[in-house]
Image (cartoon, rainbow, N blue to C red; front, side, top):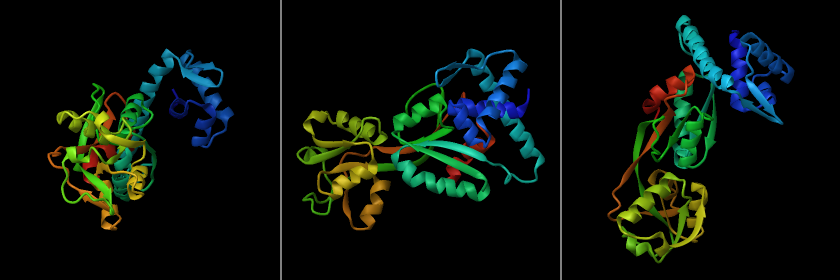
Length: 294
């Protein structure tokens, strides 16, 4: 088998499109199609079922994809072993990140990583923690960085950083000092969506204190941490968010941070990867050195 053909094949699988794969690796669509056809002739199997505009992997295609990843990784390892340094490594790393890590952790980690591997490029997909875990499971990202664990036998978690949640209010709020959760029930409240790690931790705290969400005066739900902060700045409501996300606005004297009494639960931000996914050498090095990149 031709390794270049296998490389082209993996790109078609990842993009689910011949045209997008061609654009990614700077080939014409006809050249990509020729490589796939040659690979199919060599192996005497059909790799894709072409249904309309969709290119769906056949069972043989699915099996070959796993072998192709392993063979290409082995090639990268051989190349690395033959080079004097690792700085020649190049390629794309696809990261899924939830709101807070995507804004505050990932840029710093990418900067640190590129100081050692300057030819690495990154594609960051930011969504809720639950969506990040799903993307790691289905292989559309190499790994994720998120603020909540979602149990699955395929997922492996590496704790990166511990932090806590805090209450934020506008500068005009009459809330002063630490607050009890019961004291907040009559205030308009801005809530993250149900798939976020922050929301998951808040709901656990409410359940622990036997408080139903129906008792809260929730005026808005938002998928964006930045949008949530803007709601608070506009005095539409109060919110509970990551201290890391709130600190920048507090330091600029734009909002107030309050401790929540009896809310002592600290959370971790994790790197999560799929143990069944064969990682590229670049991704593998990133995962293994992630804690040192913080």
